[in-house]
Amino acid sequence: MPPLKPIPGRINRNFRNYMETFPFFAAAILTAQVAGVHNELTHWGSIAYVGGRIAYTALYISAIPLIRSLFWNVAAFGMLAVLAAPFVPH
Image (cartoon, rainbow, N blue to C red; front, side):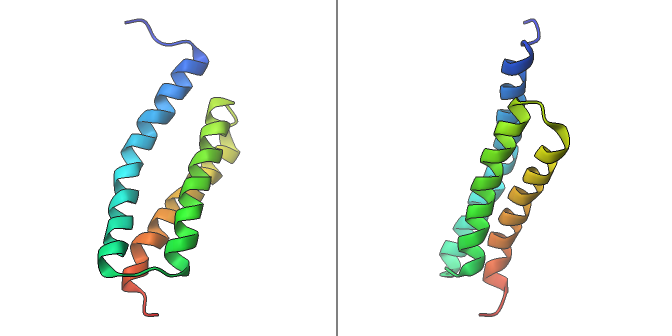
């Protein structure tokens, strides 16, 4: 199959990247749920992950290189915040 054109190719690569990170986010959410932890870390971490991924997707498809990395990191830190929530004392 020939390579995809620029925009469909970016969409495909972004989706593959999302599919690599989402299982970790889902596991972090499930861990917090099982631990019964629902605090600021889980709340704002979830918002940071979802918002960061939305912004990253728009910037990736638009081919804006440096700022999109910032938003990828926002999403990653959000995921880490949710994962850390069960282990941080209240």
